[in-house]
Length: 446
Image 1: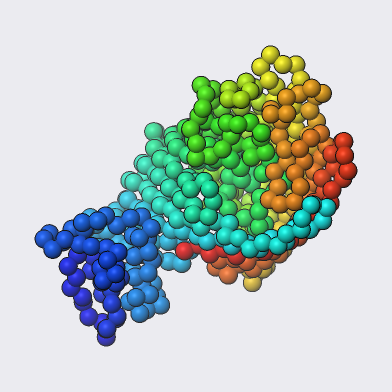
Image 2: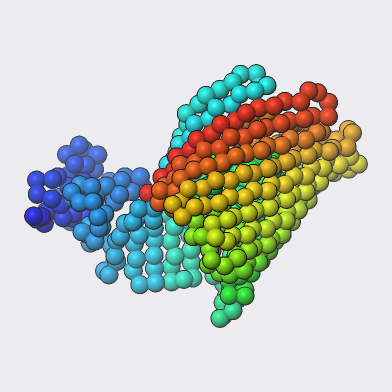
């Protein structure tokens, strides 16, 4: 039998008999103090503390149904509903306005052996993220993600404003730190992968967030997306340019520009660069597909003046639990006033199958080739970007063959994945290197 607690604060929680409220615990431990006058907080509740309060309330209430309708926050606008569902986060809704507080933890074990100088075994917290996303009257969207497991704390921090729309088309502008939508695999969230990490090719030529602005045109009942943007830094994780890197300002006058388009078979999501998700967990009865192309024009004025052009072509199919993807890249760069070109190319092809009981199995092949002219400035070139083992840093080729398996316990929101990667790095000058990478990951989205 439950009773209503009367607390001297702006937060009231109905809790089980003799079970202390979250706020009482915080007050008694002097973590949180409230005034005795109007009941407002002397110290504002910080973002992580507020998240803990909301996510922990059902547990202190002594129930397993996670029904946050029992959590009342009178300071919120009248009519606001608060709900929680595993994998969806804490959702605040009020009419056409919606905000979601969520987070995830990604743990991983890596074993790397072979021709490297030192074999390694390592347990790591790869990601520990908490975020907020919101939609205001279907006109404005925002997304903020903070990561406590990496040196770069701010991942996404953007606001999207719809500028114009009719029944068939819409035009929006997204400004802030974001994924510039170049490449296919890396545009999806890390929580929506079927392999424990991004592939060799996509990690070399794409995958880096940048600060800037993107114009996004949606048409054909949201099946077609066309985008054009300007950004501080390059999206290639494998670049050696000093100006690359997320969560940073532009150090020179030059900007990078990205253009591209994606056409999908339907508007159900999970296909396009706007919402790509690996795997066919819904075991689609129809053949679903998506094709895309993109161009990235890089400009660098810090360290070395240079220009680069990268091209991406990609395709995805999903049907009856089968998923296939191809992601191909070509990049060329040259120094201002120079005659030597830096050239590189690569591709990823992968396939997977999800059973009715939500087991998944798959394989992937990824390849990168570097072919720079003699005398080229190495700073304008790339190096292969892998999540372990050996990088290719000069002319030659690198490849990775990966065998994957895993289990989805609650869709993509709770999963365990493992994969074996056979890595070969074969420089034109020097000895070939072979490594074996074993990775096991465990992801939970709150």
